[in-house]
Image (cartoon, rainbow, N blue to C red):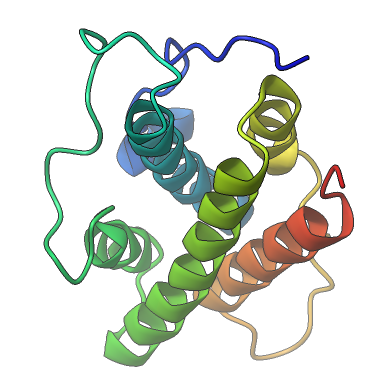
Length: 157
């Protein structure tokens, strides 16, 4: 039996609003992943006919090449971390990979356990090891990669 899916928890998260704008790299990466997973969940549950047609639609922004606005979220994350263009590109690629994993999971098993797993990703994503020369963008990238790893390892198959 498939549990009903509600889009009530699929709100946009502002990266600057986390911890008053002073969140660490892991917190900001988690906010970016929450924003993107919410956009994916809202869009896919609507397209799969799992929510009332009158419910909120998918992410209204984006483009044909970036339906969920990953580039915008990555640019905002990079700017919040003081990153440069190379950091923005690296974070964009990582967030695209994360978004693809979330979309595949939700499309394959569109029920509440998958949404719960995605919602719980922001806990303990990465432990800062304090390597010399690591930037906040490096830590955010590591947090996103840890989230992707957890999605792949913990998938409810």
